[in-house]
Length: 100
Image 1: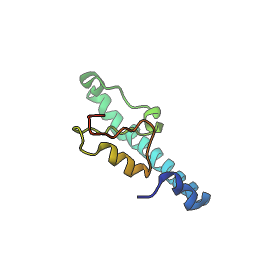
Image 2: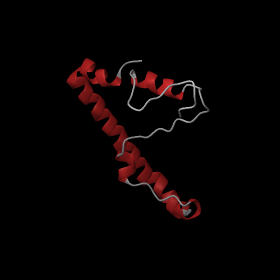
Image 3: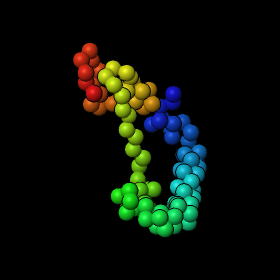
Image 4: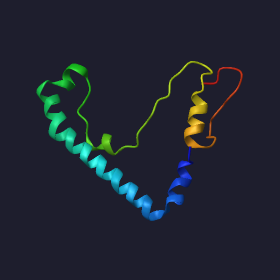
């Protein structure tokens, strides 16, 4: 798997800008789909009242994505993160005793 930090440099600034522009375009279209199609249905059926989940705002669409990795002891959670990042990360602990 490629190192994400080096990918932008390897692609060059022009290609990186194209990726950023496409990402922004997708984000904008997702916001429009939600506001035009999904939000009216949520309001009509009072989704926020029954499920105690407020309607999404632009902040939720623009925020960095978060991922939660869950699993039993010693199944490879830290190894998956190291693989995806292509490097070690601060605070990682791997040992014979439960560390996660």
